[in-house]
Length: 131
Length: 131
Image 1 (cartoon, each protein chain N blue to C red):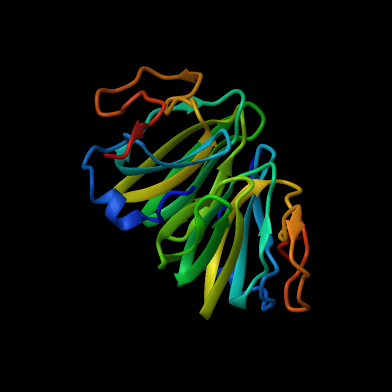
Image 2 (cartoon, helix red, strand yellow; image 1 turned 45 degrees about the horizontal axis):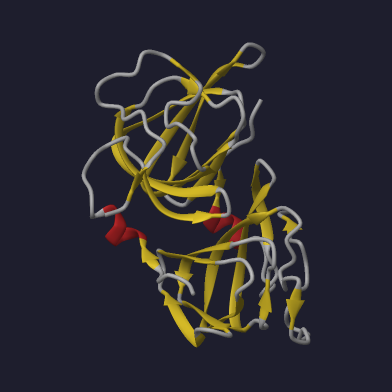
């Protein structure tokens, strides 16, 4: 009637790709995704959804910019959470690398609805299944 | 335009109550809640929503029962995730104590829509704000 618990460390060790989220489980019509990251993602925005970040390991920066508030960067050490509100342009980055967990509606694109040109190292995806 | 990151360890140290979830942030119409737990919760079911658990520290058991599948217990060590599907009766417990993170729709009652008599040590709540 239900599945088994999923160990996030084991799940993270099952893939190597950076900026390429894996869907570990689903909650109603939301995905719980994990990703390994290092270097820079791309400026993008999700017009219709907030995006939740939890840093599992390492440190994640999220640059944010808006017409009214200008640009700023928040830094999340391991064990910190942050929500990027819908519509806010943001660019995650991690100079030294990090592992992160995200909650977002199933179907949400990793590069949002609006984005700068997507560099080759960034996977534009709605998330991959864990193998 | 946005808030600041929230350190979960600091958030957990801001309260002592067991089985009394705190809302650390919101994602669209969902809450991200954290709770300290020890001992036993109560058999209950959420008829209209799945419920996501991530163990931050310690170890959590979740007993599950259903007419077809009988009763079983899943054990989540720190770093494990599990989703209780909607409608499935479950009872979390933690003999040695644990800290957990949950993801569920805002307004979801901690004791579900159906439950056994709620013991005095269990808080029947839709979650409290972090102070």
